[in-house]
Image (cartoon, rainbow, N blue to C red; front, side, top):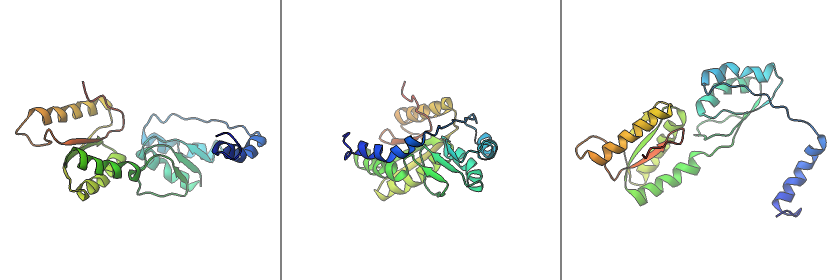
Length: 198
């Protein structure tokens, strides 16, 4: 809908004052190389040296937590666009990514009801997968399911691919091994999209 009564028309109506102001947005970018410690070291620079009050960025929970003290100390605003595990609130952060109530709640019920009660959870070894799996464990168990194991692998995608392939191979070919059965479902909260099937 593009009429003034439609949703796009309403957005245009609210954006007009900003468009009339003709203020340019200047992009200032730093490359913290996905390292939380580098994020921590660079966090104060835009808020002090560059005179910036709004930051768009951070792609993981560890990075967000690394910059949060500087953001709060300087009363800045962080727009965090990635997955958000919950259990944190700051008036200085706008959490725009999905949270477990939008993903884990429906997934747990679907898995247990449609694919079996035994679930193995695997993920990258950092905050989001661990917190997400903590929620998923409670949800799966509340639907009568059982968590057979949790596996966390380093953030390097190659290592994660190898670990997941190993788990899948064990579950298919070893009748007397500890770990998942062929009917187990893997909940993967790995940070990157993993090409786990050959």
